[in-house]
Image (cartoon, rainbow, N blue to C red):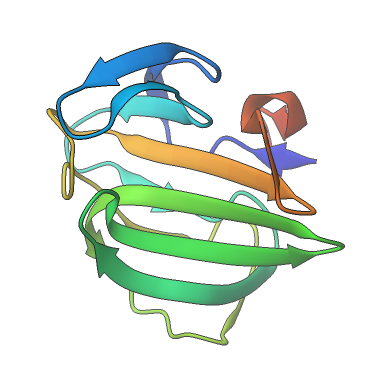
Length: 131
């Protein structure tokens, strides 16, 4: 079971919401946006290996964790990264960064996406609210 990757105070955008922005036009949001207290710690939702730690135009500071069996999670808009490295094995609950608003973001949140065999799915359907 996966856990929600921060002390969430709000689900600011649900999976599947249709949005329109000047950067992307009209599109379906294939992730969830999670709000928390400012400077909230973001942690790994499950054990895995860090396969991306980089900054991108849209998602800002981004971490991707490979959990095996074709399951990946992405954590976007981080303010800063935790002291983790590419290829590092990380355990569920280990810090990966601080919630932020880097990239195309209008406020602090974590853009949390999940892919199963390269198909985007709602990560909240895979969660438990306790460790």
